[in-house]
Amino acid sequence: MTILSLTRRSFAAMTLAGTVAALSGAAFGQTSGEPVLIGVSGPLTGPQAQYGAQWKQGFDLALDKINAEGGINGRPLQYVFQDSQNDPRQSIAIAQKFISDPKIVVEVGDFSSTASMAASPLYQRGRLVQFGFTNSHPDFTKTGDYMWSNTVPQTQEQPLMADFATKTLGLKRLAVLHLNTDWGTTAKNLFVDAAKANGAEVVATEGYLPDEKDFRATLTRVRAANPDGIILESYYADGALIVRQLRDLGIDLPVVATGSVYSPDFLSLAGDAAEGVYTTVYFTPNSPRPEVREFVEGFEKKFGQEPNSFNAMAYDTINTLAAVMRQYGTTREDIKSGLGQISGLSSVIFPDVSFDPETRRVSGPQMTGLVVRDGAFTLYEQ
Image (cartoon, rainbow, N blue to C red; front, side):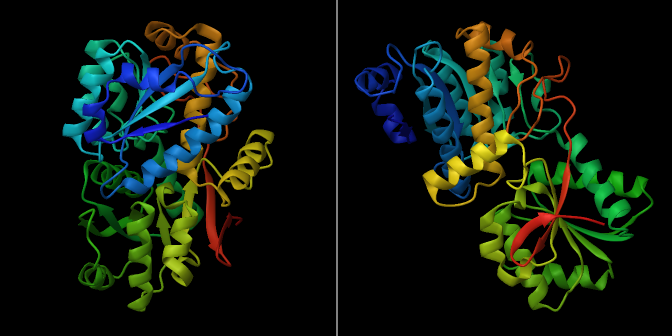
């Protein structure tokens, strides 16, 4: 199976029609004919490039299985990955290209809600489904009925995380560190409101830039506020830096981080400082469900490492869209209509996938608490 990755420069030099022609001789197991193309807008270069690489791992593993089983009713399923660098200006340009090419039947991405939402009005006007599988901003699906997501919105996720920190762990005086981005600020605000509603006091909030590396001055201010717990609205790379510097400063407080840190890379980057860090997730490779076992074993065989939540979200997204296409058709309108009808689909993250017709998000998600013990994420037990 051939998977094509395109940078902005190469995209300008090669049309999608040319891409399809170049791939026409590729082997797709039991499939034949014109590929069904998914357009992907996401980061392959720039500060968030690691997430695009993790998406591709999940995509590729899903396509191995889908195409070996006959693809989409005999046609191979393929994706075209356009590098946005997680930049809203690039996501807009990509949207224009995808919308204008009839071979693209659905779009997935971008990485951040900010980059995705910048392009949403174009996808809505162009009548092409934008499937945001890492877009937790509560407003992502509000642009129109072509915006869909299998990500749990922050309006649900942050109150659940606040419950875990304040009710399960019993923390009462909290300091919140957050990425100073639209995602991070929204997450912080929702968490703070929910924690206060639970009777906790938020004694400090500190924002930081995505490329920030030295947090010592910030952490010194946090220590002066005398919290009994620290909340991280972070990705795994910056979260790892923060916990390392926390421990270097001798700040030995409970840390509760959003599920974005749930990655083997967080453990390797944070080292011993990761011990005792809590998080809340929807996916854990320790789950005994058959769908999870198949995914984890297949991922480890193909890539030689344990998958993280971004791998799982990408894998689920391709499988969900494939199920919709197989059952309801491959036109743009078929996919939009099918997303509203699909139900009873068991995925890696969710035991039963169906979409709320009003919010166009997955219905009834459940969260699991984890804690790092002996260098591994383990189920939290009271």
